[in-house]
Image 1 (spheres, rainbow, N blue to C red):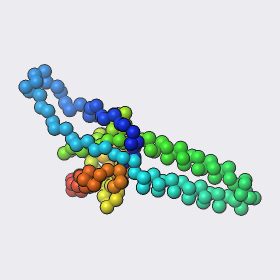
Image 2: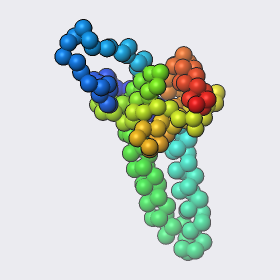
Image 3: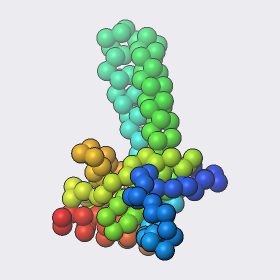
Image 4: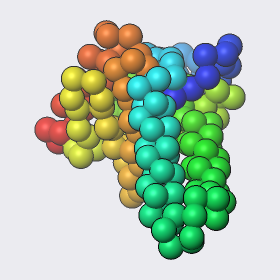
Length: 171
Protein backbone atom coordinates (compact mmCIF):
# COMPACT_ATOMS: atom_id res chain seq x y z
CA UNK A 1 0.00 0.00 0.00
CA UNK A 2 1.77 3.19 1.12
CA UNK A 3 5.54 3.02 1.25
CA UNK A 4 8.39 5.20 0.19
CA UNK A 5 9.80 4.61 -3.26
CA UNK A 6 13.32 4.99 -1.88
CA UNK A 7 15.60 2.02 -2.02
CA UNK A 8 13.96 -0.20 0.56
CA UNK A 9 15.75 -3.01 2.28
CA UNK A 10 14.26 -6.39 1.43
CA UNK A 11 13.02 -8.42 4.39
CA UNK A 12 15.74 -10.67 5.66
CA UNK A 13 13.55 -13.42 7.09
CA UNK A 14 10.02 -14.44 7.93
CA UNK A 15 8.39 -13.23 11.13
CA UNK A 16 8.06 -16.61 12.76
CA UNK A 17 10.44 -19.55 12.57
CA UNK A 18 9.28 -22.37 10.32
CA UNK A 19 9.74 -25.02 13.01
CA UNK A 20 12.55 -27.07 14.44
CA UNK A 21 15.77 -27.05 12.50
CA UNK A 22 17.18 -30.52 11.99
CA UNK A 23 20.92 -31.02 12.36
CA UNK A 24 21.15 -33.09 9.21
CA UNK A 25 20.92 -31.08 5.95
CA UNK A 26 19.46 -34.16 4.24
CA UNK A 27 16.46 -34.12 6.60
CA UNK A 28 15.72 -30.42 6.29
CA UNK A 29 12.56 -29.45 4.45
CA UNK A 30 12.89 -26.25 2.50
CA UNK A 31 9.61 -24.56 1.75
CA UNK A 32 9.44 -22.54 -1.44
CA UNK A 33 9.64 -18.80 -0.88
CA UNK A 34 6.43 -16.90 -1.08
CA UNK A 35 6.26 -14.28 -3.81
CA UNK A 36 7.35 -10.89 -2.47
CA UNK A 37 5.39 -7.92 -3.77
CA UNK A 38 6.76 -4.40 -3.39
CA UNK A 39 4.17 -1.72 -2.62
CA UNK A 40 4.36 1.81 -4.01
CA UNK A 41 2.75 4.86 -2.43
CA UNK A 42 -0.91 5.11 -3.41
CA UNK A 43 -1.47 8.67 -4.53
CA UNK A 44 -5.22 8.11 -4.55
CA UNK A 45 -5.39 7.05 -0.88
CA UNK A 46 -3.04 9.83 0.19
CA UNK A 47 -5.04 12.42 -1.72
CA UNK A 48 -8.33 11.22 -0.27
CA UNK A 49 -6.97 11.37 3.27
CA UNK A 50 -5.59 14.88 2.78
CA UNK A 51 -8.88 16.05 1.23
CA UNK A 52 -10.72 14.59 4.24
CA UNK A 53 -8.46 16.51 6.63
CA UNK A 54 -9.03 19.73 4.66
CA UNK A 55 -12.82 19.24 4.66
CA UNK A 56 -12.86 18.58 8.42
CA UNK A 57 -10.73 21.69 9.02
CA UNK A 58 -13.01 23.89 6.90
CA UNK A 59 -16.13 22.44 8.57
CA UNK A 60 -14.72 23.27 12.02
CA UNK A 61 -13.78 26.77 10.89
CA UNK A 62 -17.25 27.46 9.46
CA UNK A 63 -18.92 26.03 12.56
CA UNK A 64 -16.85 28.00 15.09
CA UNK A 65 -16.72 31.36 13.27
CA UNK A 66 -20.18 32.66 14.38
CA UNK A 67 -19.77 31.45 17.98
CA UNK A 68 -16.27 32.86 18.43
CA UNK A 69 -17.21 36.25 17.03
CA UNK A 70 -15.13 36.24 13.87
CA UNK A 71 -12.91 34.35 11.52
CA UNK A 72 -9.63 35.29 13.23
CA UNK A 73 -10.69 33.84 16.59
CA UNK A 74 -11.83 30.55 15.05
CA UNK A 75 -8.65 30.18 13.03
CA UNK A 76 -6.51 28.83 15.90
CA UNK A 77 -8.71 25.76 16.67
CA UNK A 78 -9.06 25.06 12.94
CA UNK A 79 -5.29 25.23 12.42
CA UNK A 80 -4.82 22.95 15.44
CA UNK A 81 -7.13 20.39 13.88
CA UNK A 82 -5.26 20.62 10.56
CA UNK A 83 -1.92 20.13 12.34
CA UNK A 84 -3.22 17.11 14.29
CA UNK A 85 -4.61 15.64 11.07
CA UNK A 86 -1.30 16.22 9.31
CA UNK A 87 0.62 14.46 12.10
CA UNK A 88 -1.82 11.53 12.02
CA UNK A 89 -1.42 11.35 8.24
CA UNK A 90 2.38 11.27 8.55
CA UNK A 91 2.21 8.52 11.18
CA UNK A 92 -0.18 6.48 9.01
CA UNK A 93 2.11 6.86 6.01
CA UNK A 94 5.17 5.66 7.97
CA UNK A 95 3.25 2.63 9.27
CA UNK A 96 2.40 1.31 5.79
CA UNK A 97 4.22 -1.83 4.61
CA UNK A 98 6.80 -1.76 1.84
CA UNK A 99 6.63 -5.47 0.98
CA UNK A 100 4.05 -8.19 1.32
CA UNK A 101 4.45 -11.93 0.94
CA UNK A 102 1.64 -14.31 0.05
CA UNK A 103 1.84 -18.03 0.61
CA UNK A 104 -0.70 -20.84 0.48
CA UNK A 105 -1.71 -20.36 4.12
CA UNK A 106 0.36 -17.30 5.01
CA UNK A 107 0.28 -13.54 4.53
CA UNK A 108 3.06 -11.29 5.84
CA UNK A 109 3.76 -7.56 5.58
CA UNK A 110 7.17 -5.96 6.11
CA UNK A 111 8.35 -2.39 6.67
CA UNK A 112 11.10 -0.65 4.69
CA UNK A 113 13.64 -1.69 7.31
CA UNK A 114 12.62 -5.37 7.02
CA UNK A 115 10.68 -5.52 10.30
CA UNK A 116 7.60 -7.72 10.26
CA UNK A 117 4.40 -5.68 10.62
CA UNK A 118 1.90 -8.55 10.40
CA UNK A 119 2.11 -12.28 9.84
CA UNK A 120 -0.82 -14.66 9.71
CA UNK A 121 -3.45 -15.91 7.33
CA UNK A 122 -6.03 -14.01 5.35
CA UNK A 123 -9.42 -13.99 6.98
CA UNK A 124 -12.76 -14.53 5.31
CA UNK A 125 -13.62 -10.91 6.11
CA UNK A 126 -11.49 -9.60 3.24
CA UNK A 127 -13.27 -7.35 0.73
CA UNK A 128 -12.23 -6.67 -2.83
CA UNK A 129 -13.20 -4.33 -5.60
CA UNK A 130 -11.89 -3.02 -8.87
CA UNK A 131 -9.61 -0.40 -7.31
CA UNK A 132 -9.23 -1.28 -3.61
CA UNK A 133 -8.65 -4.40 -1.54
CA UNK A 134 -9.28 -4.59 2.18
CA UNK A 135 -7.33 -7.58 3.48
CA UNK A 136 -7.92 -8.84 7.01
CA UNK A 137 -5.05 -10.84 8.52
CA UNK A 138 -5.61 -13.11 11.53
CA UNK A 139 -2.65 -13.95 13.74
CA UNK A 140 -2.86 -15.27 17.28
CA UNK A 141 -6.53 -14.39 17.73
CA UNK A 142 -6.01 -10.78 16.62
CA UNK A 143 -7.28 -9.23 13.40
CA UNK A 144 -5.48 -6.48 11.52
CA UNK A 145 -6.53 -4.94 8.25
CA UNK A 146 -4.52 -3.67 5.31
CA UNK A 147 -5.77 -1.50 2.45
CA UNK A 148 -4.16 -2.10 -0.93
CA UNK A 149 -5.05 0.35 -3.69
CA UNK A 150 -4.79 -0.62 -7.34
CA UNK A 151 -2.23 2.12 -8.00
CA UNK A 152 0.16 0.78 -5.33
CA UNK A 153 0.97 -2.50 -7.14
CA UNK A 154 1.11 -3.67 -10.74
CA UNK A 155 -2.00 -5.20 -12.31
CA UNK A 156 -0.84 -8.82 -12.00
CA UNK A 157 -0.02 -8.45 -8.30
CA UNK A 158 -3.36 -6.76 -7.66
CA UNK A 159 -5.11 -9.68 -9.39
CA UNK A 160 -3.10 -12.15 -7.28
CA UNK A 161 -4.14 -10.35 -4.09
CA UNK A 162 -7.79 -10.28 -5.19
CA UNK A 163 -7.72 -14.02 -5.89
CA UNK A 164 -6.15 -14.65 -2.48
CA UNK A 165 -8.87 -12.55 -0.83
CA UNK A 166 -11.61 -14.42 -2.70
CA UNK A 167 -10.21 -17.80 -1.74
CA UNK A 168 -9.90 -16.69 1.90
CA UNK A 169 -13.55 -15.69 1.93
CA UNK A 170 -14.51 -19.27 1.08
CA UNK A 171 -12.96 -20.64 4.28
